[in-house]
Image (tube, rainbow over all chains, first blue to last red; front, side, top):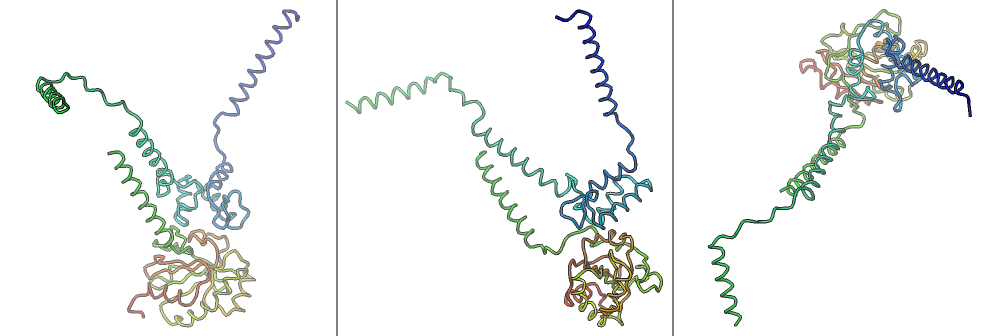
Length: 161
Length: 178
């Protein structure tokens, strides 16, 4: 059994370690201003290299990708916005040049059709299996209905005999 | 009621699928759409390969311009060259201008190519690839047809033949010039 002073010291050390960990985490996660180099990397990672098979401009070693990167670098240094830089490439290559094409263009159908099909399927299942069973008819029969029933029973019994 | 709606929905979805597939299969796989066809041709001023000063697209306003991107290392470019030579001969005294654009190549190699293969039309050098990027060039050879109004009327990816060149030119050539 450890002495009470040693246990307290251990708790302090654990607390200190947790505090240092939390501070380090907060420092690492804090938002910081993106440098031009980081911005160029991000923009080129979102652009498709036209002469490659599914590679981004950032990842491609081709000359076309290098020329595209140089153009992005120039536009960033000129102070153009991300949207303006993307628009310049889209004007030449269409939405295809973006590795993540805008959702609400023609390509949005790719996302919307499965969702619509799922919704239709759910509606179909809910319509077939869901909902409460029809309520039993608890209204008392009218005098006319009772009279008609008596007549029919009497007719059937007389026919049987 | 829901069953009928579901059947109608499925039928509608099938029809839509058939229409989409029919449209997709009708497309020419060489016809990769870009943003530039149907829009004003990006302006440029580039140095001539022969060193005789710069060429601007604007100096050919009102004419039909055939812009052909090529390089000496490009085998399909050599394959299409005889067609370009014949079309150049056919239209050289007319309102039709052919301009070659040297793409990702050294000027020395480009000059050898021009000399050896009888390229007599002007060729400009796209040093930094900016003009190719502004036209949306995917790979060479690529040929753009620019109308007298300065709008890109068509584009051909891959080696082009004489008939396609003539058809592309005549489609945008003013009737009076024929």
